[in-house]
Length: 309
Figure 1 (cartoon, one colour):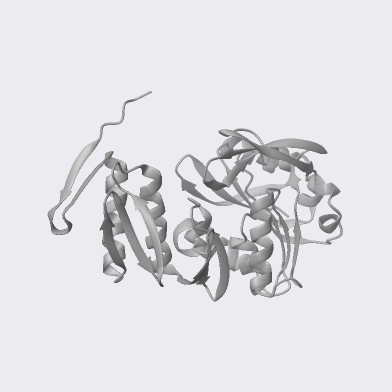
Figure 2: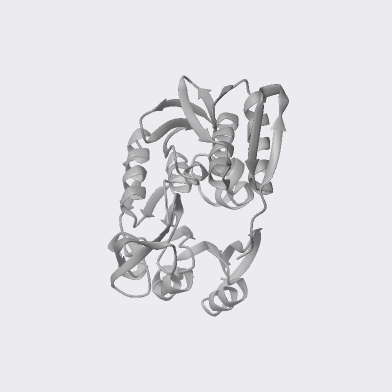
């Protein structure tokens, strides 16, 4: 394992001394500058940075500074820039983004990806794929719905949505977000995992990263979930056609496709997150799909396919 070198940084204007690795310090500096630019009140208390947004005090340990604390501060800066925090409790913020109300966990490192999806998470996919396909009376199947970043926006546009999210806490917040926006009539939420077979499978977790629960790998097992092929889910099987099927399942996408042969026969567009693009493209080609577009995100790709009629 590579040793991480710590760097000492002095901020004389604030009488502050911070010690951390280069990546953490760079992220901290960007977030700190952004918060100051937005007029957020900040002050220092021993080894803590304290921010005040909408009367909410948030504490960040800065000496030593960890990448996790830098990322938390960076996420707060993004929320301040692209959304409006209107409420909070011990565990969550309530924010407004795109005219929708969102519940996000205060200490999550990736919850903000749902409300800020068009701005920070997947702006290209949202603008060039999703918005061009989904509209009033469309049918959207969201496999790996998380907190509803795509689900809520599709329903707000008038689409019928079937949303799958297997993890209990994520599913609970998804339900709250649906209720907060009175979109129950447009969305069928299902707490189930898509796979090629029936059964119970372990769900792995990486601490404080709630969008990356996986059936394949992680730091530890969070619990066990029910899995089922998409072809065997009645709410999906009953649809005559599907305008967009989105699959974001942290590495299990090929197994999901193997259990969705009949579902794909009536699907116009397919949006998939994958790290195995060539293998996945070959599989989809054999099922009658061609690649339309691709967007790279670090080690993975989001790929848009359409049925080749």
